[in-house]
Image (cartoon, rainbow, N blue to C red; front, side, top):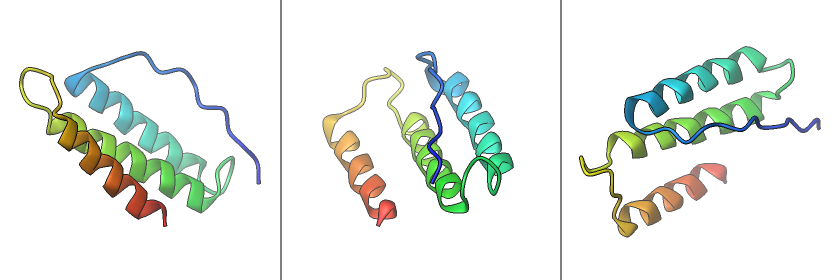
Length: 81
């Protein structure tokens, strides 16, 4: 299995972050079967989609309640199995 190097991504918020994540999802799908296995591409896509959900569910103040973060990690772990 070949490992990929994840590029540094600047700290972004809101729709700007969602836009970058959507671009990454497109890249993951384009690299499926090339530089990424299908499982790798799907795992990265699922993780990016979970991040988008978290960004879009943030309160308007930008503060995320601790229980919201814990829920994200529980969902994140569940799709890894």
